[in-house]
Length: 262
Image (cartoon, rainbow, N blue to C red; front, top):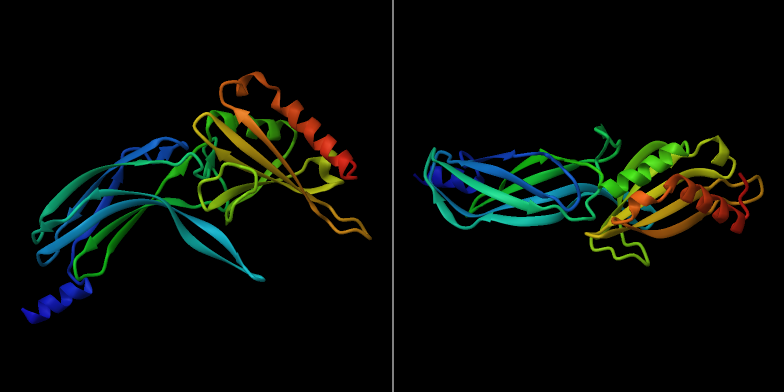
């Protein structure tokens, strides 16, 4: 009996958790729903809580070094304390609000290279090791985000990669402790002055901020520098704007002001 209690304390022969998402495809602002099935182990277990979280990988700058870490950015309590008998099955339904600023992982069904996103189910067991389960999800663009991404494609920009970086962007209404950068390679008409274009969406329920960063190509005796642009897109009027023309005009005006030439 003492040996079994020791195993239970170490998490050996403990309960298992299986999470099933009703639909792993979501957009920012959606509600993600699913079912959690908790299966009893070799002994009776006291479950103290069942929590569901959204987790992604972010890059962190620390001095002169960089590293990656898992970042939880949304959480909901799916169940409270209960007793789980050996081999018993306990089912819990959950719903989790997807934050508006959730990074994108897919565009038109294609995975954005560099992005990982998942739902973590945490089963907290009294006096035992927590059991966790990770299920990937796909976050697709909002209609307004699609319009902007289509405009960049029309101008000839090619997707390179995407990542999430810890930190906050000055001048925007950002709530999460990190932001996503979607990186594009420039077409020939911009390539003389730009190495790459980085796009960040900070979305909300009625509008979104769009932050553009141009990585300037340095010359023989000059250093490259970053050029920033920021504008707000209203969801109600996004469809009535020629975004390809607007973005092209901004890029050229920004280049002229900062001495870049296309």
